[in-house]
Length: 80
Image (cartoon, rainbow, N blue to C red):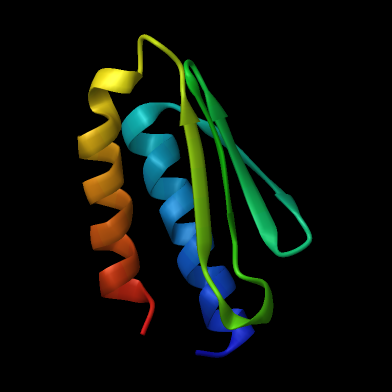
């Protein structure tokens, strides 16, 4: 998948997480950082590899499965 399409998919995921979970996102090169109440993570796509890393605080940890499934579903639909 071309880098431009990967970036568009990452931007869409960041917007979705902002709307649904109130997190903020910011770009640093090919990496989007996600930050919110009890959530700190990043999604990068350097070299054609998509890497998602999220750290959840104690209060957000019960939502781990839901967030993981949501991110996986989005990537499955938008990254081929």
